[in-house]
Amino acid sequence: MAGDAFKALAAPTRWRILDELTERNSQTLFEIRARLVTRHGLDLPRQVVSQHLAVLEAAGPVVTLRQGRYRALSAPTCG
Image (spheres, rainbow, N blue to C red):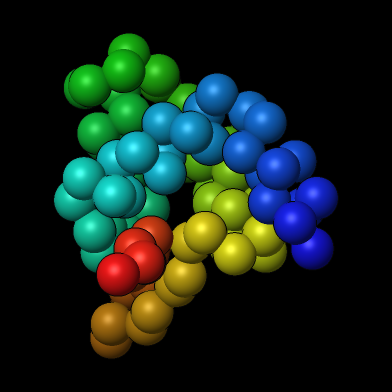
C-alpha cells in the first residue's frame, strides 16, 4: 500500500494538486483546475485533472465528500 502512495506522488502534477488541496482544502474539480491554470500555468483538460485526482484518492492522500450535486476533494492532514 505504501508503494501505491509513492507511485501516486511520482507525477509533478499530482504534487501540485496535493499542494493546492493542503493550502485550500475542500475544493471541487473545477476549483482545482482553475487554481492549476492561474497559479501554475497548467491548462489541463478537466478529464486529465480528474484522472490525477482518482489516482490520489485510490492511494489515500485525497478523500472525496459529496456536497449536494458536487464532489468536494480534500487532503486531510495529520495532527
